[in-house]
Amino acid sequence: MTRARRSGAALLAALIAAAAFAATAAPAGAKTWIVSGAGYGHGVGMGAWGAYGYGKHGWGYKRIIGHYYRRVRVEKDRGSDRIRVLLATRSGDVKFDGATKACKRRLKPGNTYRAQRHGGEVRLLSGAGKRLAGCGKRLHAKGGKTIDIHGVGSYRGALEAVPGGSGGLLVVNRLDVEDYVRGSLPGEIPPDWPKHTLEAFAVAIRSIALSTDVGGKAFDIYSDTRTQVYGGVKLESKRTNRAAKATRHQVVTYHGKVIQATYFSSSGGRTESRFLGGPKVPYYESVKDPYDRYSPQHRWKFRFSQREMDSRLGPYVDGRLRRIRVLKRGDSPRIVTAKLIGSRGSSKVRGDTLQVALGLYDRWAYFKKR
Image (tube, rainbow, N blue to C red; front, side, top):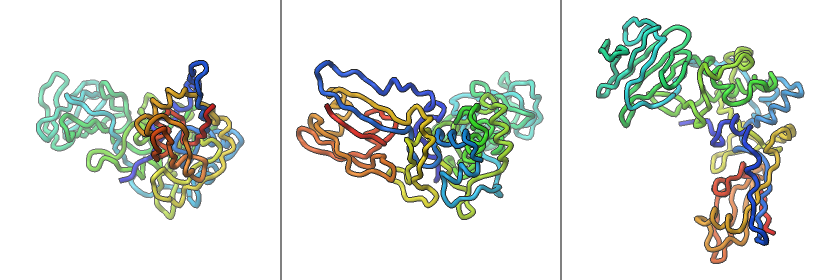
């Protein structure tokens, strides 16, 4: 099973994150830990701020992609162009309108209908609750331009309601991948960024969507950061729609296979060649990323009191923390493993454990105590 690996937050959220969080006051006269670092995210693949800089300086989208993913090609996809996106789960009925047909019944798009779970199957009801049809294992409702799912949003393509494993219904949007890109691209990077940067991300987003399968029979991908942020029609913008259209059907391939064209917010100036704990992938390489200097997280600094460090790292250190010694870094300076030296002994931790415990933007970090 493959999936797009992310930093744990949408890029758009990363871009507006307040740098003020990087400084916490220490009591007067107390020892202070200074954590200096760079970047925001896992560092593998395409850095958003670096791509922003390349686009700003006139690089075309294929050249941008060729910088971040090595020995790849940008070409038209020859496979399936339909994907299924999990939008939500519902314990009760799923109400919708805008559909013209469902469960072999013609519907009025201006009317509201319901999908209701009945044992291991789904049935179609009117808005008032009258049974209209049995739908078997899946309700598939299609219509005109959009389907409006009450409490969820408005989406192109079709609505599918599928019984969930723990009860209730899975709310799934089945649609053309091109419409998916339109509803996802502005959720990942700002629509006012350079044209060629938007185009590079349109290709990457399409590639991830077509190379990911997390749900088996019910759905292919998530609509949140577990895959990519997808918000449907409400997220679409003219500029990102144009970028999607300009790169229509284009994907990133390696030896003819669509790749996981992963991306993240800020590289700190150099990307990483592999995910922590993951295998070496031939099209991921550590490359210089000079235009990452545009990022507000290109360089950052945290300050912690001794008490804060002992509290945050308490589950991983034996006694009071005295020193942090980095044992191994990646091809970029991101921490792979480190030793926590405490007053009663030492312990070894992974870089991501250290990052999460201290609330750092990235694993690219150096530690000083003064």
